[in-house]
Image (cartoon, rainbow, N blue to C red; front, top):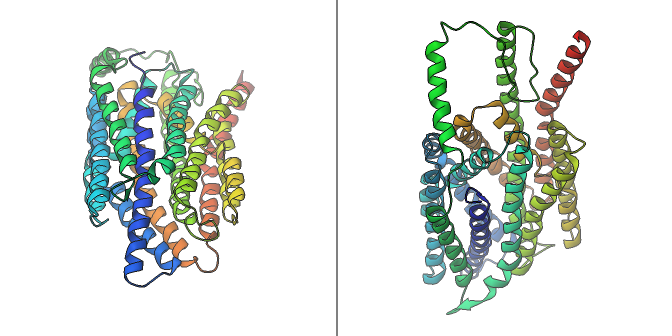
Length: 452
């Protein structure tokens, strides 16, 4: 039980949901006061000010982690995985602390740009989540890895659901006429718990096995030239089947693995950019008319978004008995595609929750893709592979999220949901690489069945 990463995931996400709700509402209050002082009460001006803040904030916090995330991943692959968990959590803690100072002392909201830089240099979510996925992969068997990664995602979502559900209520309580102080203090306390758990309780899984695997790989490389070719004993994934002879098999296997990995990276990147872009735009979308949500409604909306983690877990638990990994991915992608298309036409609160209900399986694809990737790579490379994937997704997400927000600003006056239609198109395109892998897999099975 000491190797379970779920308590850290739950604690950090509870803190993160407090921070996200607090930051959004503090930014809204800041620009609301600024527009009042300048006698400009236009809702469109307020929307553009908030969205411009998040454009800059997202650019900083998603680009600065790129070098540090890769460095931390290499450190983690050498067996020091606690470092790759602890360093990003330090960045999260400092960000919450700075938000507390901004709220308490009425500092300019632009101070948060500096905290975004520090958070990024600590690896931010890019390093943190790739480390979590690597940890959960090491602590699970190959057969049950998809389910284990989704359980980790479910823990993440359930903690976010609880945090978001109560965050709006906590935000209302004021200290010296400053709303949000108690909420941010709760965030800091939860991050402190995570650090203590990592330091004194958490135990690294399979650390000795990874070190021995590295030593074995080095020994195999030295003896490779003198070795007599033999048949490959196992296959790394059920997506790649064994061939007849070692030379032909090895070339085909390596080529197929690399092509599959590249296609998985492409599909994951496109899909992740659509999901992240949708969440970014929804943050502003719910604050303006006709929804015009307050702190409590924002908390409930975020809770509905995190509830998708739970429903996605249930989807994998139920449908994995009759569907393979690739079918699960396509099923989840279609769920998001249909839900975000409905979101484009949301004009009433109940319709927002209907869109969220349709998207209930939209988080199945990412952990399932990571599970397939883990079956195609060695244990000693998990951290590096997941970090590279997270870095690529981060870079693309920055560009696409900025584009989606810009589209939202331009179309704000005549159709504020137009950006969701663009996002749905990108989500549909992400089907193509996965569909190609599924077709190749089916064709290969048919060929082997014919030969047999």
